[in-house]
Image 1 (cartoon, rainbow, N blue to C red):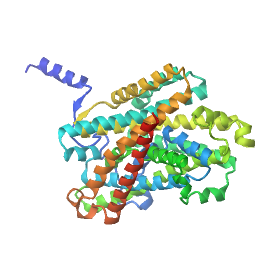
Image 2 (image 1 turned 90 degrees about the vertical axis):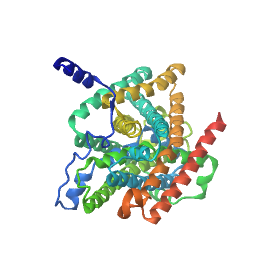
Image 3 (image 1 turned 120 degrees about the vertical axis):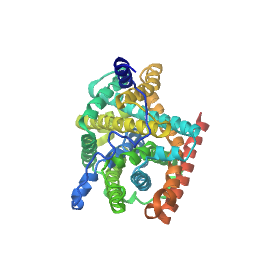
Image 4 (image 1 turned 90 degrees about the horizontal axis):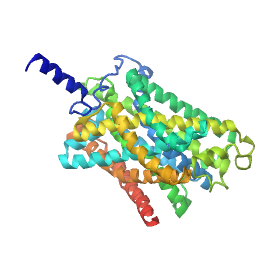
Length: 459
């Protein structure tokens, strides 16, 4: 081969958008974050903190908002126990996902592909990619509506503008993974502070709120159960398990040292549980806000715009109603959508590399995923002339699809982390963890099938 041919070949390789990948999960960030060797508990925890925040984002995306606030508006504090149970299940699943990644040095997609054939791997990849696009639909809708509420941008234009968040991702990839984690934590803090303030001024019934954490038989009534299943389906999302099993590997440890591996699992679990506790608090605040301000007249509060307007309506929100509450609500909605943009793109890369051993630059992945997600939202906006209720129905349907995809990630995760052959004697699930995990998997699968069946029978 001549020197000119060699240069041309190298140039062609550099121009490739899709490349073969069969190395470490998210190779660009894998084992890049240093860990102090002799740091105290808090210093070590700070070094491991970050991946949990990216995971927690999925538990407070726009798909959770209408469900939680609507649940409070319709049923008061009754369903706050469902948020608690869902969050505890999420903590268990995320602990297993992080442990799988750290111990095996493979993410959930890579591990699943290693124990299945190529054909099944492609099928699982397509299903998981569809679930990511379904999640992205909620982010497109939330982002477009937030732009309309804040800047009066028409929905069609707002939906189109959400494609430009690929430029934000391009900027973030230049900053480094640690700074991405910091930005995500900052946006989560904004959401938390906004709703903490709004709940405080709404003067909730504290006694009734704490009583709501105890599950009650009324939850099993038809209307309450439907809303409860919606909260469960919107909370436990399949793509987050792939994400955590990968980004838990971003910390640099000696995998030949079992004590270091155990330490990494321990602090990854601390990080995950702390961040998921924050997501739990935010979801509780959403429900409490709906219960405190709108219980008794919440039937018409099924869209983001109706909630935005209600927060400044004295007849609905009472004396605390003000434009400031509405603006803060819209700002938090926009922050939520941008947060989910980052994690959805990373997860897309993880499943693409893990299941079919191909990779794309993050900006290209983001552009393709967002364009696919924009098409149904844009079509819905044009066909229904910008009616937000139609977009809200599309958002709910996207959550239904997530419910269908959920067992695809939960079942292999439980199988792998319960296997001594895969995890080793020290890191295999304890018996009680395995039993609880299978119970959660079976119950959640059943509940999500109930959602799907209810959706089919309603057509």
